[in-house]
Image (cartoon, rainbow, N blue to C red; front, top):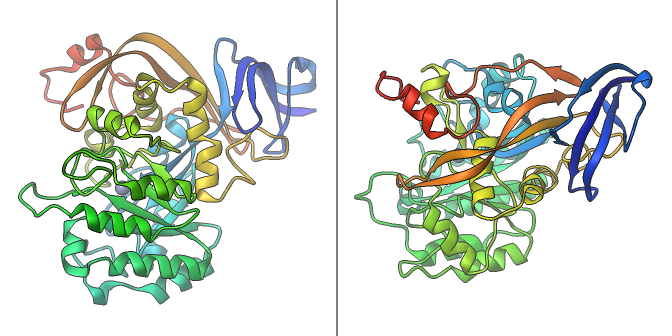
Length: 409
Ligand SMILES: [Zn+2]
């Protein structure tokens, strides 16, 4: 007897090459069976998902659900409420903040939350990025004590760090990650004041050259300087070489790091993203709707519009993301025995506005919306959406409906 049966959907699981009509049965919090027709009488609860896409639980490799000494907003706002069953917080805590991270996040999260630890000791002062603030031994100790949570070490290549440290913090992150048997996630892109001196392409190239198989570069589609292209718009060959060595390339957006033109310039020079992270930030303390940025499914519409198939998008957000985090034995697949993490999705045709970091809008004809999310076999209640129109990108009518009433959705 199964606990739960998802009946009548289209199963899309790139990890197993499945793309077609099938039912999914869950027992004891694990995937029990995926088969063309499983009798309803064999399950305690049956949910009709006809017309929907049934995918492995989606994984966001780059999210922010914690900032030191800030009041928490529910981490599931970046997770299961919007179809994401697993996420990695990218550098919220350093070793000094990790206990608080655990206290803030784990008692409330239904979403599985992993951590990339910052290479800097204490993130409660985000300006503390000098050489004395680097804490390799603290990172190693903390990571070794919490292997179930910590999956890597985060470092940022941008003017503030490069001008004071060169690439010492990247080397430190790499040293710590290797000692702990983990991966580096390296930010590229010159966030900060527009007046600052851009990071020279040679420095970005050197930083990319330091990464090895399993490491992650995030923000490959950022229109900012100090990233994938040099000042003449040529792709840094080191980015392609990194991918060829097995470095994961991630296009997380956040507030500043997606440009339509940039994405197409990078791809036209032969480099494509492996994953789709969001860099979503639930910005504790200010009320969710004001600050929650694009969720994973809203951002996925951008990739459909760039020409990726639905299967490509699901591959990048399931099996590829699971491999990037080193969790492919438990997540990213509907293979029997895996955690029963399932994202039931609605693919909706319509007219949707997709805006990039420079304000350029493209109209898309398709969006993916969360319909139902299952985490460890439990059906999750939907939570508050980031926008008043829900979880997807807005239609023109939806934007018009909220315009002019003071809410900056
Ligand atoms: Zn980030």
